[in-house]
Image (cartoon, rainbow, N blue to C red; front, side, top):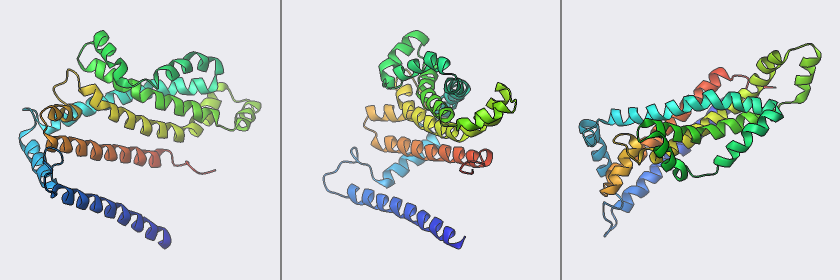
Length: 261
């Protein structure tokens, strides 16, 4: 137990040390002669920009509204993706004929860059949040669906056959064997999907948007406000880490049998 605590402390120290080195390199790089702050703002300039945005907002919109609008789009799309991808993925993994219908559609659009069809979504659904949430939904759907199919396919078939031989119905097999066995992979798929959706957020907010943390970064880039861009990027990274940590905590609480035979 003590050895495990030592390893944990060492890992934390390495993490903190890594970021201190990155910060030091950043400070030293900004002190180089001839390097414009438009190219690489100093940490002090980024902090000042953050305090200004925190107090005054950006483009007369508060920072909390920017974050709120982005997370409303992000979590709305994730909710829809979880609601649809999990049942479709589980059914596709369990019924090969069902997979023959759904899988080819998912595999067709999955490698297409989101910006390639975003213009079409705007034409079909308008410039409001509908097209943005749909774009994020499509980015999140595929990882969850694939994780569910893979989870069901990797389940030991002896468990299913044993249950069926003892008289278990398909409903019992699904609820008591397939779903619990697939839940760890499903959570991993949701974590991956949240990352994909977050990286697509900037693309979703770059067209016909007036708020959102992704829009703030895009708007600042048009006017070479690199300090504001750094603020937005750092906020996205920190909130992304917090969101992933939330999923890890939920997984530890509700998927407590993960890794146990």
